Image 1 (cartoon, one colour):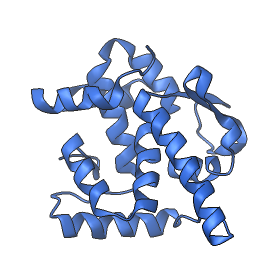
Image 2 (cartoon, rainbow, N blue to C red; image 1 turned 90 degrees about the horizontal axis):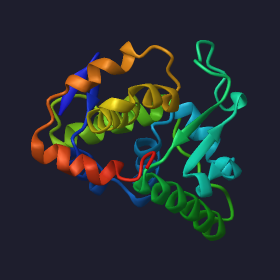
Image 3 (cartoon, rainbow, N blue to C red; image 1 turned 120 degrees about the vertical axis):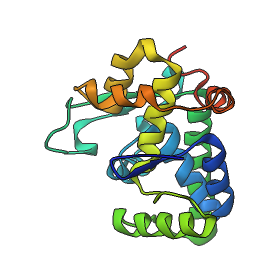
Image 4 (tube, rainbow, N blue to C red; image 1 turned 135 degrees about the horizontal axis):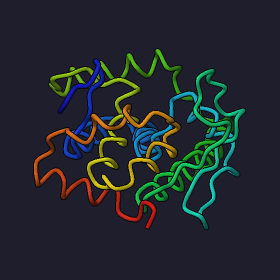
Length: 193
């Protein structure tokens, strides 16, 4: 596990450990957060906008109204997905549909603050060195993409909604082991290929 600016960046093994620890409704949510690299607010809105997922293009289109962040780099953007990302999105929406059928109401996820609290508690119970937060999944995904596709940093920045490449450049230097890099490849295969 690594830490950058107070945010934990998970190795694939740590991510799997966390995912295995939580209930199925959170497993699907964590996969969505990790494999899309979306901001938490974007993910909360995306879950009600299935039509933004474009499987034929292996991407998610995020229009401006999904996240009205003042400093947003672009008014709209495309989030490119790996094969695991496509599976995560499809499983997530399938889970939402089943939940709604079984409970006669849509599934709700915690607020940003509530989810941050849950993640910190789960991380403590798992003995993680650093605090896992809502931002950990976005930063972890950026790290995975950057270590795997160093020649595509500009596309990574655009997909993540950044204009400033320096925000990604420090992720290139995260010292993942060779074994971790092999595991990361399983997560990112199919991204822009």
